[in-house]
Length: 300
Image (cartoon, rainbow, N blue to C red; front, side):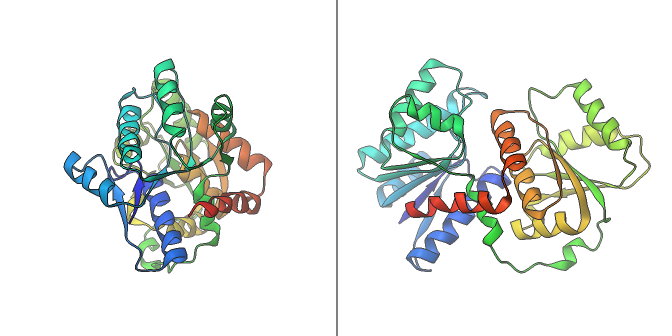
């Protein structure tokens, strides 16, 4: 059994997307009957331990190792990986984004945990530099979600009939960077374009900050709220291509998917991974980012 470890089960579209893609590619390589489970902090410790015992390999995905929101997530994921190592499981750290890490102790724990992995791929230069400082072998790739460029899926057209075309999409999230001045700036920018607006929630909880921004709008144009969880990744690509002219986003994977769709992407650089994505999409064609992401497939 293959076990996928990450920030799963909490309504985060990006992390669930990465897990879905990893699961589909594992089954494509090892057979459709391959058993794959997901390990979530929502499960009891007894259930988590049982999954670890039954597993053959543990794939750690996403951006688990950061202490911006406190050290507890690092402690949790580190403990799970240490237990897996003690159980003699193979640990594969897959297209991981490290940081930001501010505390010397969390940096030490992260280096210890990464040294336990048999294979490591990271998705940005800052993560690579962090591992290079400790001489931990790894490869640097782009985010796993770029392989969406190669995914084919049926589109349910009926989901889109009520949406206005040529709209602006806004995808905000709770952040220490958000204050009244920030929201006023975003609202003024949107108002000045005099277009319909689609607010996109990429995670449970995004709806509230999107609503605050909506209440600051002066435009009489239509406003629509949609939940990304109601759409497959390919349906989001279809949405962006056919209904949205540009996006303003604080959500990493909303910006990435919009770039695949070929629309104008305005990233709000609220954390290091958004800064890195901004540099990537401004300097490299989508096809190159896709091919680089596929390098991670050698770990499957």
